[in-house]
Image (cartoon, rainbow, N blue to C red; front, side):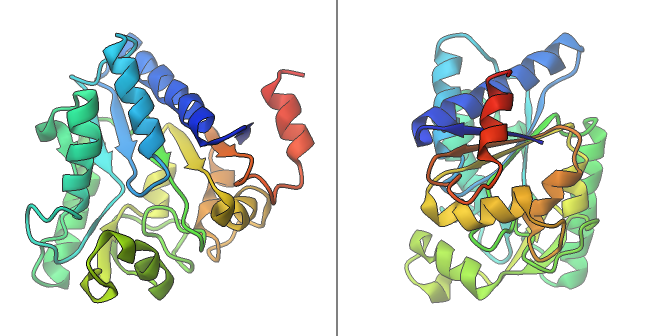
Length: 261
């Protein structure tokens, strides 16, 4: 695992964007359509802005890329502005030129558990069908969740239905009219699914994320902090600003490594 600490969120976004641009270039050089795993929430917004600027400068092209979302709410009607499909169309497709028809999102429209499970299985097949994800963008929740894999999630889990914790629903209530409007369930890539991406890129900024970042990077590998599965991956990069890095004990080593010392 590599850890990069930047002065602020803007620099973190620029550093993370370089990782995605490099991954896309590597895929193109290998003769593959790039496949990018997309996260929602506040953490990757700066990254998506930087990618849009890179597209405008001709540094990267997403027109032939595929996008795969980490998760989707269960029960929101098609076209709901807070569905993750709509969020990603607005924040990614329209900004970086990723074709909406090449954006795949877990199916949260099932009317019962059986239909939702079948949709989750199809999502796994879609990922395999394009040859896997080249770079998976991740945020981390204050309770350590990645995707919507809440604490207690199996470290080998696949795409499936999950109940959202009360803390996660409260954190996401700012996007809805009230807490009662926040869905109680989601369909999310599992931790085992996430680990199959060729490269993982976790972006976190702000003091509120510092405890979760420290637990994920330096704590034990445990289902109590789902983000700790990054320690299992051979090519995981963590990009954080000073505030989010406040709880890291091995900061000197990370800075030396990033500087090539």
